[in-house]
Structure formats: structure tokens, C-alpha cells
Length: 201
Image (cartoon, rainbow, N blue to C red):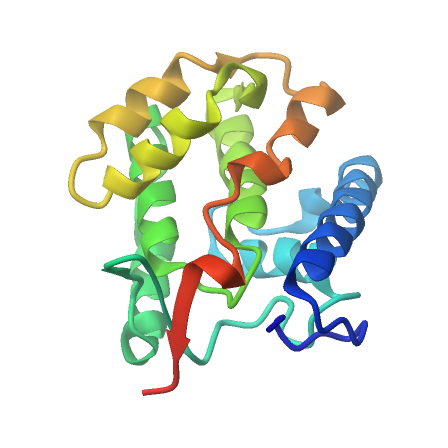
């Protein structure tokens, strides 16, 4: 089963391919339009606008906080009943140092505010914070996929691993489109309907 979508696609593999293509096209538009300069950096409102821009052609829920509980394996993301409170807490978290920024990123990943597309939109969100506060971004070409996914899985318990991994990949090439686009790559997805158990509780 595929997530309900505006394109009428019923096959999850086909939807993933189409979603990947459209979201990358939209990510390029986002990069070239400078619309992100109008977004609130480090706030959920800014993340929601990124998500809506990337996925509005595909999902009705683009840019909207999820209304179902989701999990990956045995890990449950923030329950819907606590999601609004969690997002307000994340908004209030400081973001002036590298450690603070990554801690905020980890908390947003635990919140996983959207039904789908969290990884791609949140990596753009992370780079916007790093760019604003430190004049740096992550060069995702230097981040091994498996290392990243494992570090993100462990980050709610211990965030040292993801901090070291991403710190070693920082670059001051903040206007490089190739560096930006690598963060949208499907190989870094910490998401996907077929890997989540979702239920209305």
C-alpha cells in the first residue's frame, strides 16, 4: 500500500520514485528562488514551509503536522498528543553553537512532525541553521549513508556520534548547489512508509 497522494499512485515503490524526482526538482527551485530567506530559521514554522514547498504537489498533508502516531522498528517518535508541546520546546532551544544546533536537529528528528518527508526537509532546515549561525553547511558527500542512519537511530540516547560525524563533514561552501542537493538524496532517508508502523490511537 502506498500513502494516499494527489497523484493517484497505489504502488509504494512507484510513489517513492516519483516523490524522489518531484522533491528534487522542488528542492532546486527552493535553492534558486531564495524563498528560504523569508523562512524562520530554526523554527517549526520554517520547517513546515520547506516541507510544503517540497511535497505540496504530492501530498495533502504537506507542511502540516502529522495526525497519526509513527514508529520505526521499536522506536516510537513523539506521540501525536505531545507533538505540539515538543515542537514549541524545539522552537525555544538555543542554536548559537554547533552542539546546540545538532541537539536541536536530533530533537526535531525525534519529533518527526510529518507523515512522510521528514529527513529531506529537516536536512535543509539543519543546513539553514548552520548557514545562518556559523556560516557553514554539511557536505553530505562526506557523510556515509550507513554511518548517518545508525548515528541518527542512536542519537536520542547518545548524540556524540552524530555530532562527530557531521562536524567532520562541515564546509564553508555554503552557496554550492551540489553540496546542498546531496542532502536531498534518497540514500539518506530516515523515513519511508514501508519502514514505519503507523496507527491511529
